[in-house]
Image (cartoon, rainbow, N blue to C red; front, side):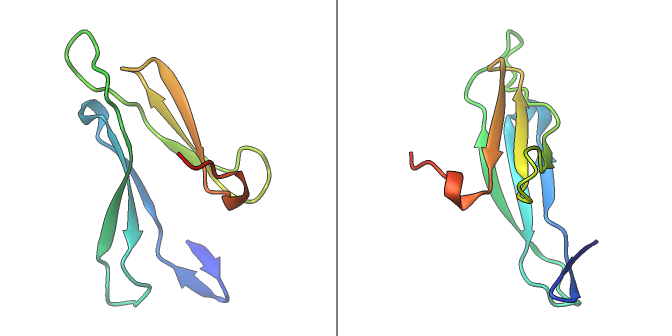
Length: 96
């Protein structure tokens, strides 16, 4: 459970579709105690396929890898043979 401004926040949930090739974040629609609806945001979609025709991604991990207090998101994309890293730090954001 996370605390923020003296209260409790509902968690964000990180999901992998495994062979479906997508990573999603479920974000609470509100912090109201009686509203447990979430909004889904796809943060990564694999475009390559393995030899078996799958768009396999592994288990994503979100943690503060560099000690800045802001989590980084790591996504292993087996189909692309890559390990991707995303940051939530607005100072490091890159426009694409």
